[in-house]
Structure formats: C-alpha cells, structure tokens
Image (cartoon, rainbow, N blue to C red):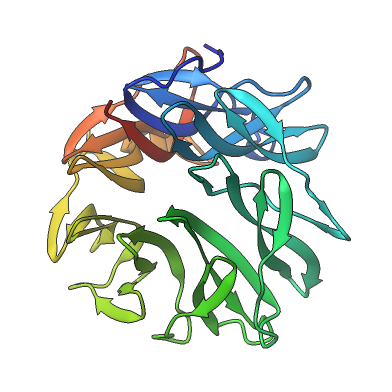
Length: 339
C-alpha cells in the first residue's frame, strides 16, 4: 500500500525497506517504507525509481518526516518524505556529492535539520568526507579542526532550542586515531579519546546532558566516561530520566543494558538468529527494532539471509507483516505516538 499521510496516527512507526529479489544482491530491488502497528506502508518515490531506502524518522504533532534516498538510472538522490511526499535535497557542493540523508530533527519553529557529509574524493582506498547538515534543504559545512581531514555525522537532537549534532573526526593518514565529537549550535567539541580506535556510535540528549555511545565499551555523559559491565558490540542508546538503556550484543547474546542490568531479547524460535538495530523509550516503555532469520533460511541463501522484520516492546517480541512476494526485509528506526 502506498499513500500519503493525512494525519499523524497513534501507534508504533518503524522505518525500513523490503526486497522482492536478491540475485544478484548488487542489483536487488528494494523499496522504502514504514510499518504502523505492524502493517507495511510503501513510501511514494519519483518516476523511474528502482531502489529506495528509509532511514530515520521524526514525528511532530502534525507531520511525519522520514529521511532516505531514491535511485534511478544509477543516480542516487538524497532527501526525505514529509507525510509520505518525497522531497529531494540539494546534493551538489562544489566538486563534492553529499551522502545519503540520515538523521533528522525538526525545530519548534518548523525548521528541518538533516545530517550528512559531503564527499571530497579518495585518499588511497578511503573516501574522504566533510561533516555537515541541511537546514531546510540548504547545505551547511560544520567546522572541523585543521588537524583532521575526514569527518562525518551520525546523529542530531534539538533540546531547549539548542541543536546538537554528533559525529567523529580523524586524520586518515593515521587510520586508527578517531576522535568522537559533537557540534552544539555549530561549535565543535571533541570528546576524550579512551582508545586509539574509539568508535563514536550514537548520541542522545536528555535534559541538557549529552549521552554519547562508544561502540565497544561504554558511553560518555557530557565529557565523563562510563564503562559498561562487559565489552560488546553496541549500536543504540536511549535515556529516560535517570535510566540509561544501551542496545547491543554481549557474548553472542542480543539484548540491552538498563543501567547496569542486562536483559536478553527473546527469539521467535530456538533455531533463529536475531539482529538488533535501534532503541527508543516512550512513556517508560522500551522499543527495539530488529530482524530475525531461521537457520534453514541461512543455508538457502548464498548472498545473505532471508531476514524478517520484528520489534520488542519491554522485551516482548512482535513480528511485523510483509507484503506478498517479499523475500527479505530490514528495519531501521522506531518512533512512537501515544496521543
């Protein structure tokens, strides 16, 4: 089903994409959309689109915004959907092409901020990028210290009128020296580096405090480091009051930390693999998106598993519907409307 969003409805919104073919995977057809309370909705795309992808979602009292890209004739256009209608972003900047639009936040006055990075060419096998953002479709570079020649963004929040953009910088001549950072109203701030290869994964702002997740070991609150009880592979952080939730994989178990208490996520079946993607808190309920894949399905595929979409609410598993003919799905982000 493809239709515009006429009103913001109460429910659980999960962005993602669906595949109708996978051979070869590099030429797969996939289409962006979202699930609302378990039902799939395909997002409309410009004529000639062969592939589309939905990323992050932001919902106001009147509008639903989803970032992503559409591809036609090997030309990829970054943009966003507002209430189901596609808007292409200006992607030209001097000699650089901006990457796919990812994270989004909308200010109280209606200004739309979307983070990204523009490409600056290749340095050996590494693609050089410069961090920035779109403000109402106009691109702005973010300032970066001169010691760095590569930077990118990976999150945005607007809190009490202040705009926070997360990211990291590095000197690509020294590949392992990564400095996590954030920009507050366009002003760069580097975080203390805890290791030579400190991957800044996500950032969350709550009541003026900035929570920044490091991929393998813990998180910062503002500039103070907090190490988690066990090392793992962490991919999401959310905060509600004094409660900090970190999503990830520890000792091959998928689950999340609630402060320092670990909870495993249940699987659809004993022989199923599950993969988490994002976490959000709404009215003290914990929502986690992901996919599952049966062992038998993994044996069938030579180019990737047959993933199926799902989410957990407070640890209870919910399977998401897939349209007829879909052979693989992916979930990305979740947002919840309670009123």
